[in-house]
Image (cartoon, rainbow, N blue to C red):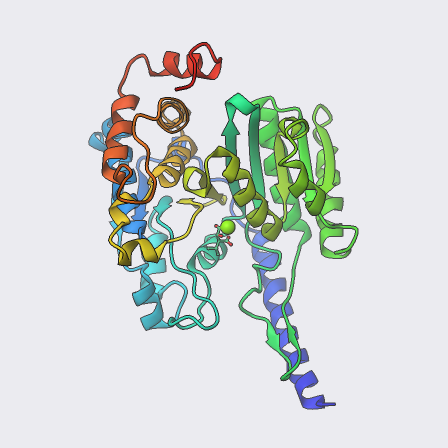
Length: 404
Ligand code: IPM
Ligand code: MG
């Protein structure tokens, strides 16, 4: 038995614990929510990302500029590009986020980010941490909020995925103990579990939702999922009008395809990795991950992004201009709502529903036989500027007009 390997592993584990205990202190003394209404200027940064990212980011930015044109011309909102979050630059610095780029990002209240390449073992890139994961941690974006709606099937879900803990907290800090044993760590903290549960219940309360469902595997992963669940029910006590229940991740994955039961779920609250997996499955009912947006919310900062990857193959095959910008445009809509314009969020989301789910005059297929991202964005903008948009949208939703 290699005693030295055991000692090395213990020492490494000790360091991780020290860091995490410091994180707990920081978390407990963190400043409260930013009040956007009180800011003179709201700063929006655009991060293009890798692969198809810059292509869909450009279209999303055009739509944002149109939607916020009054705020931008009155300087209430400033929107700028942030350079340097590319895989080439990250590899050059050997860091998930180069220091100067992180400093730049922190100058913006909210960012809209294109997908970024996440290297893994065996890739041509150094095996650095995912910059998504690093950004979520650096800016303490503890809630990953992912709505999925398919009105004609009665699906209206919103996922509150914890975004800074679980296997992600120490995902790139595992231990290769010896030639045989590799160990990763999973961490759930009480403040971490509390704040995500509270946000889910607050959302339910504000939106008049009547049920919040927690998803874990607490029957097997007893310590960490056990804590997540226990804290969930503790927070639930503060919301007596809202039904709180819980499911295990395996059966929940099955129930999402059960047409009779799935429409009953409303708000879901779950640890990071289950949330990662379940939200991809959920997005599939809406038309795939290319159609879903994602908000990464913290008390000081927020970052909005597409939930799909950077599809480098589309670039090498010359199809990047045909990548679907819908997911990133949905993220842009969430951004607009987050900074205090829910009316404009609603307008853009209605346009996206009309274009993507009902009318479908243009369809992006990801191949050159489909619409280009630019044409699709134009279609969304035209739809958005139609004064009858909301009435059309309501009519489609109510099934008063037949689906084409
Ligand atoms: C997501 C993505 C990321 C995650 C990857 C790119 C690290 O899958 O945002 O869901 O696992 O969180
Ligand atoms: Mg994912």
